[in-house]
Each structure stands twice: as C-alpha cells, then as structure tokens.
Length: 436
Ligand code: UGA
Image 1 (cartoon, rainbow, N blue to C red):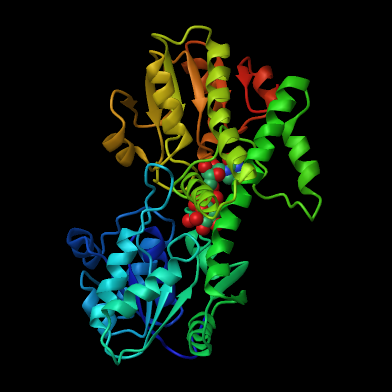
Image 2 (cartoon, rainbow, N blue to C red):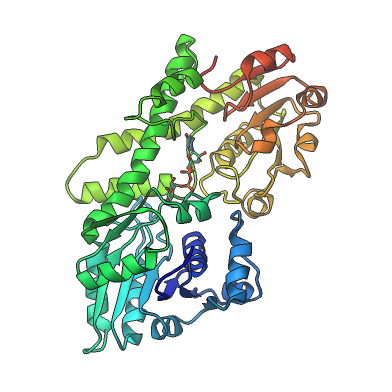
C-alpha cells in the first residue's frame, strides 16, 4: 500500500484505538506522533514495550518506529506543533448512570487549542455522544489564539479487538463526518491508500453511526441468545436456527453466534451510553434497553445451567477455561468469563482457571482463584469444566484426556465449541447454549 500524499498526523491517547490507528496510519505512509499523558506508558513505548496484546500490533509499531514514521511523546504541544490532523482517541469511561465521561476529551480539546498556531483539523475517534463535536468546537474556540483556524470532524472506528489491524486496513466503510470541504479533502487524502468505501456525512450523523452500529450488533447477539432460550425450552438447535437465519442476505450470518452473553469494553458501555443519550434527548429506547437486559439474563441463565449440571456448587472445584471477553485479546474488561467466575465464587465454588493471554490482567483484578499453567492442569480433579471464552485452542483439547482428568465428566459450554453428539459418545454430561 502506497500513500500518494504523506500527512502529518497526531493521535492523542495511546490505548487500543490510538495505538492501532497510529501504527496503521504510519504503515500506509503518513508521519505519525502518538501521544499519551501517561509518562511511563510513553517511556515503555519508546523502548518498544507495547502495553496491550493485539495480534500483529507489536511488529507493526516496531517496523514503523524503525522507518522513523512513528514516534511517541507525552507532550500534546509537540503533537500539535508537528501535525495538521489531530485525532483524539482518549478514553470515554462510563459514569454511574452509563453516560460517557467526556472530561478527557474536554481536557485534550483545551490543550490542543492552546498550542494551535496554524490551521488544524481536529478529528474525534473515541466513541462519543451526539453533539460532542459541538462541545469540542466551542472548547477549542474558547482557548485558541485569535488567528488560529481549525475544523472539527468525526471519524469513528469500527475495529474489533483481536483483529484490529486487519479491520483497519480492510474496512467495510470509512465514516467521515465533516462540515467543510477542507476537512473532507484532508481526511480523503489520509485514507486514500486504504481500499474501502468512504461515506461522508455531517459530524452528528457520523457520531450516531458509531452508536447505531455497536447497538445493532449487540442487538443481534441478544436476539440469537433469546432464541437460544426458546431452543433450550423446545428442543430446537440454535446452531441450525442461526445458520438458517443468517443465510438470508438481509439478515447476514455475522454476530449470530449464541453465547453466555457479550462483553468487552465496547458493547456494554456503548449501549449504556446510547440509552443515556436517547433519554436525554427525550426518547425512551425500549429496544436498546431490552438488548442490555437480555444480555444480563443470559449470564444468569448460564449460571443456572452450571447449577443444574452440578446440583450443589458449594465446595466443588470448577475449571474455567477463558478469562478474556473474546479470543485473541488479553482484555478482561466486562468479560462474561470474569462475571461467571465471580458468581460461582459467591456460590462457594473453588475455581481453577486458564487463559492463553489474559492471566496477567486477570491476576490484578481477580483474587482467590487458582491460576493454572495450562488447560489440563486446571481441569485435573475438577467437578466440572466450564468453557467461557472461545479460544480456538480450547476447541482442539484432547477430549479423552479431559475426560480422564475430570473428577466428574461434566462440561458446561458457554460458547458451543463441541458437538453434543460426540461429547455424549465420549461419555461426557455436556450442556451448551440452545442445543439441549
Ligand atoms: C466491537 C465492534 O464489533 C467493533 O466494530 C467496534 O469498533 C468495537 O466494539 C468498539 O466500539 O471499539 P469488540 O468489542 O472488540 O468490537 O468485540 P466483538 O468482536 O464485537 O465482540 C463483542 C462481544 O460479543 C464478545 O464478548 C464476543 O464474544 C460476543 N459475541 C460476538 C457473541 O457472543 N456472539 C457473536 O456472534 C459475536
């Protein structure tokens, strides 16, 4: 991929979104400075230590640092002085009522404004409520020098953790919310090397597209999980139902995999924030509320499945495989696996866990569980095996060995990783989601 015009870009906020965005912009030829106010993080990044696990990210960063296209700094001033396009990718954590905390964005807007001495395009990448662009604009206007010109844009990201780089490089669409021709031209140039349809909207519509996309996907999962309940109650098979449903192009097969519930820092948080926005705008979003409620119920339903399989939970050893909220990431934020472990602990179970990547992060949050070196060690002498995250390697477990190691041959699968008929043949008492 070759860039026709090299742009000078600053990305403020070096979390998942900021690092992936910065590294990918550098990879397609731009000159990028990634900024974070956490000095330790920046010092580590400068030494090539990447704070998150994301497949392919570390080599991509190292390669572009070596090419001198990517640098790190803790100074917003340095970023603003050296760039025309400034992407804001700082966190918007949830407040008590679900609304997004936008104070980091406000702080960044103020700081950027102070250092602006020529035209800048300030682009919002973080997931934000509608009209955040207006707030950023008025903040910048308030703190900037009189002569400094600027535009505001919204360019939401649709990256999935675990496949963020390929999602960035091969997007279904690039959403660009702008109000001026100049802003549109700069962003078109920046994204030119990437094949992907660009859609240009006003800033507010771009902000809304992001919320709408995440909640629609969450709704698809809650829909299939509702169907899994009907399957369990009626004897239908959710895998077949999902397949038949997804073959209709209007519906699509993606995000129709039944599970113990969705998690991660995006869907639960964004849905809560979107509900909050709707209510503030005077609309009661019943559909969004039901989506969130079904997801909570699904986790409780999964706990009931474990209870049903084990009879009494107190004092029993339960092996839980998977801690991250999905495979290929070490992210445990709002992970259904962690949720289930906490519920089981409250019921008095002894928990042994294994996850290929998320053990270190889990150790910082979750105490009183036995962290094992591999899946088999966790399974040894357990009264039940619970599959909580669909890491592909769990699907390749030696099931005969698993059967020998377990004290009772009980497997409760929250990700439908195994074939029920085969599990029965191997002598397991196997229960999964919507395939009773
Ligand atoms: C999600 C969106 O997919 C991205 O497009 C978006 O950019 C991102 O949020 C964000 O806003 O930053 P992510 O949270 O990384 O990405 O993960 P997903 O792959 O969407 O999975 C979310 C959860 O849904 C996981 O717990 C996963 O196991 C679950 N899931 C997903 C299901 O239970 N069933 C499915 O069919 C698909």
